[in-house]
Length: 304
Image 1: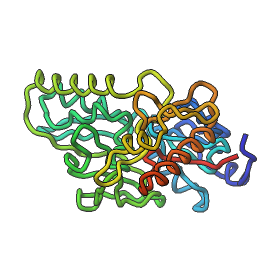
Image 2: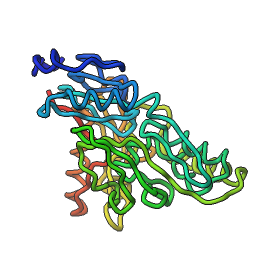
Image 3: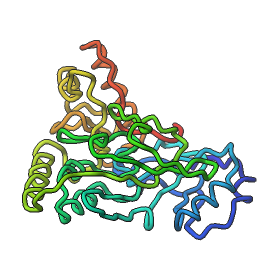
Image 4: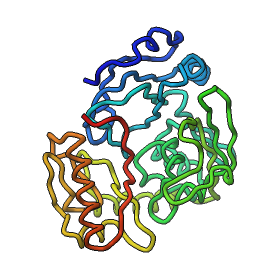
């Protein structure tokens, strides 16, 4: 367990209506099922609860926002400060014409299914993105030929001072797996626009995406999804394969033999095993190709 720090700030936090837990295990909230504790884990009851908490939190205490942990590695030493998970009211989905406004905590798959039911085409790719809308905004998530920049009209965020910000597509300044919004801002929702489509045809495209995922990617295993971003003009998995890393093992972690841009927890891996394996893959790819892979999986916390 991470040594307790800033004990005084814990005692001065405002009263909240949501759930606030100290020394909260993070591993159960990640797909890898590894990692240490958060000093504090907060699940706000609603926006007012979140803003009240932010205003009462000392400025020097770090805040980390997580979703469903699908593309996340929590290090073994735990996460300093406060981890915030947006659930419940932050997962709402509203439809107006061809525009869907989804809360940051809404699952990408649920948004895609809502679009299907409403006859809104163009959001099918979200069914192939494991995560939430907040995470999809933060990294301009994409799959199967489309990404968030193609469908986002606007997004809403709140900063550490409790100030609300309505962000246009230009404000977000999406690039490959990145947006320019300050890291300390917390996404609250996104408005996504599609076009009219027949629900049956949309469902067919989503089924094709699911079939392609099942054929190419490891299923029902402890993984963090796509590990490295594709370098310009290259596929990360091809570079990894060419470097001889398919099936490579470090401790309890392995490079997937089915799709070598996926790392697996074989059952007893530590976060360090997974991170060290990824760094070894990066070293070998750099050595064989001269290309430096960049992590797509987000790392939070400290190493033991």
